[in-house]
Amino acid sequence: MTEFTDITYEVEGGLATITINRPERYNAFRAQTVDELVLAFKRAWGSPEVGVICLTGAGDKAFCSGGDQKQRNETGDYGPSYSGLFEIEALHRVMRDVPKPVIAAVNGIAIGGGHVLHVLADLTIAADTATFGQNGPRVGSFDAGLGSGYLARVVGEKRAREIWFMLRRLSAQEALDWGLVNKVVPAGQLKAEVRAWADQMNQFSPTAIKVLKQSFNTDTEQFLAIGNMAMTTLKMFGETGEAKEGITAFNEKRQPDFASFRGN
Image (cartoon, rainbow, N blue to C red; front, side, top):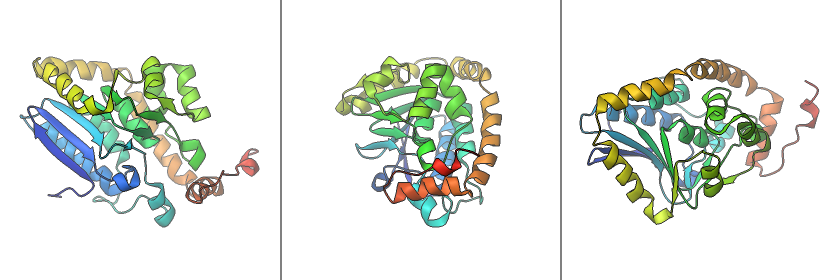
């Protein structure tokens, strides 16, 4: 994979910027997008020119809206990938393991799997127009690993359960109040703010930053194993009538009817 189609990758002044470039799908990811993201993070990892990594989305409407539900409805999966696997857990893994700070620059909606990506970033800077939330139970999906367990470490148990059980959207200011983001800035200042944070961190010892990141990660490593198990469960669940009702309703733009599944 020598050229990217679903993302862009740029390096300037010690900052690698990885941009999900599917604005027509609200920067939703398909399997190919995930493959490219994994490769881009590894490229930044191995580059001596890079000290800080920024993940963002193209345009001003979306950071990332999670898995591409139109693709899922059309083919039953997220499309072809380089390995034949949907490598979302590999993406989560590399974001945690890369020994350089990862900043999520949330420029619009961060929903579903896109919300998980910003949660996994070491730091989040949000535009004042950004919104945050989950969507899984509405479309017959879930993230039972880092997207829920680690989220609870970030915002607390009660608020994490509210995010998942109520599916209400948080404004950028609410996300800041909940400790879900580090800073909120006017949308036009987002890029400059990321640049300023990267410049500051790039002044510091890279080995110290690496060991600190590994230390921070130690307490939550178990969520990766839970996430692997959850992906196995999710794949099986995706074949059920309950999950299919969620995705069908989403694509038909109607409220799903899950009433018949409550006794299971």
